[in-house]
Length: 127
Image 1: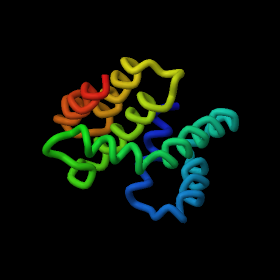
Image 2: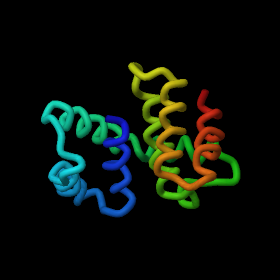
Image 3: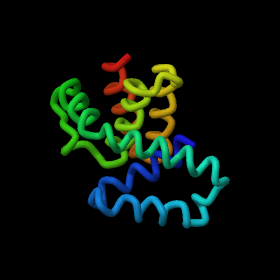
Image 4: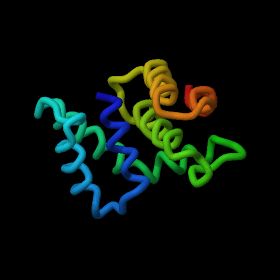
């Protein structure tokens, strides 16, 4: 489910806010993302919760990461970090260690060679 939220959240970087409802609908129409309606509802719910906190998450990231800001970060790394910071700060069901570990795994799967260590280093500031 986290991977699906990540993929949907990645679209935020390429589409204006007013298009996100349409992008969300298109996301679930794609064969690789089609799933059980209950799971889609959970994915959509978490995605929308993260989106409502993006400004706060970006501010926290910019405050804690010296020498970087969200405008300079790679889009994959930024999306992974946004999701993880949301889970660390706002999702009480997910322990911090799990959020960090899962973020590093997403960075390994979708990011560049340096992404896992970058994500881990940034998220260490939140642990």
